[in-house]
Length: 330
Ligand SMILES: Cc1cc2nc3c(=O)[nH]c(=O)nc-3n(C[C@H](O)[C@H](O)[C@H](O)COP(=O)(O)O)c2cc1C
Image 1 (tube, helix red, strand yellow):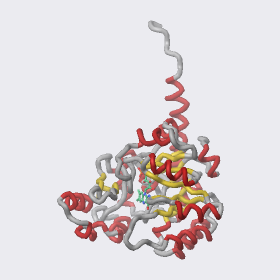
Image 2 (cartoon, rainbow, N blue to C red):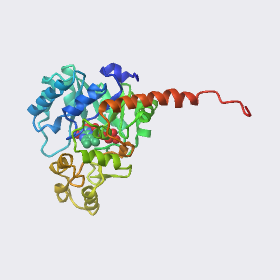
Image 3 (tube, rainbow, N blue to C red):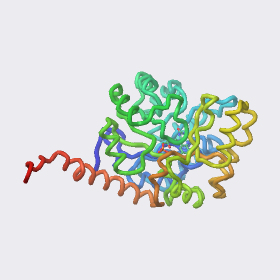
Image 4 (spheres, helix red, strand yellow):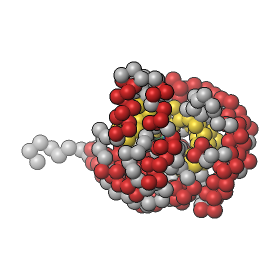
């Protein structure tokens, strides 16, 4: 048992979260995470329409009676999806917890709060966490440079970012990016967080719906096997190292415009990776933490393992460090 402000205020058994994951955060995974005692988030924009999101939330309810949430990622795009309609689908479906990410959540926050929905805002810098807190979010999730997906442009790793944020944040705070095991959970708690949010680790579980070859690739990959794409566009994303991501980096380094890599980075190409298991086919998100992934457990096994390891680290490794030293010469 590991109890924190996060577990108490959000009504989950363990301080473990599965953050939003485009193409991956679907009902079977989210329900398995919830049934294991952690908090999972369906990814709203993985569903092509708001009505399909309603159906996915209903499907998740059939698979679990435990709390789960929905991630709403607000991205700066030329043709934005109908965010207000996705938001309404979340509200109408009676979801109690939302993870917002991407941009300032102010507009959505007031609607969610008006319906008693708690909001966890994900950010990648202390200043954005402080801003989100001042807007009234119920918790923040702070993503270090290690993370899969969008680490921001500041490149501050969790070891500095988490305690720096903890010094300024009074609402419950999740640490995200680079976590996969009980050591990480204890480290995050020691740095001032109230729990951890993971992405990449949940991809390599039995219930994650991606192709087995992608899960296997995560087991084999090491910490250096990611690429940062879109640095030049100030929209950095950490993705799996493959021929396509290397080509995107190469072209942008040579001064290519976004138009010249658009086909390579197309979402339709990336989603094929998860469907077919061809890990070289397109761009897909993965974090450095893949080096710590050595198997493909069920979500329940993973959660029990992380909590068990965390308890052992606290009781044995840390407690023994406090024991008085044996007298010299004894
Ligand atoms: C496949 C994948 C897709 C992701 N898609 C999203 C997304 O749509 N929205 C979002 O807020 N974060 C997204 N993320 C980021 C995760 O929610 C989480 O912050 C990140 O994975 C934490 O880093 P880790 O992978 O080292 O655990 C994604 C991560 C992965 C691995």
